[in-house]
Amino acid sequence: MSGVEAIRQLRKRWPKLMVIVLTASEEKRKARDVLDAGANGYVLKHGSKSTLIAAIKSVGRGKFFIDPNLDAAKIVVLQGVENGDIPVLTTHREKQVLKLIFDGGRNRDIAEALVIGLKTVETHRMNIMRKLDAHNVEQI
Image (cartoon, rainbow, N blue to C red; front, side, top):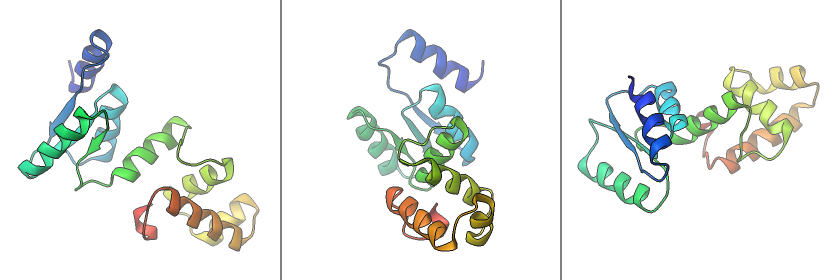
């Protein structure tokens, strides 16, 4: 049984169980799979003790925790993109723009693909950055 399947089985049997995964993998897909399976935290083995303690405290308070060495916003948002549900983005157009950004689209490409103006794409991108608390384009 894989770790992901073990998490699913544990959460199925004990739904209130809190699970923190301690792993060497920095792959975003693995992090998303673990979170989808029901884990509450994802911590890298090579991280500091204080990170692990922060994860335990955060999960204990009922919050999710993703190791700060990973791009948490991108993991959560990509998880939503793959599931067709991005809860932090409110408009259908923002979701479309975000998908095209992740596909490597430049503003001009996105404007052409969606048949909207370049300024409109820039506005959507700025709104997405604000909602994701991203401080530069590379963080989204």
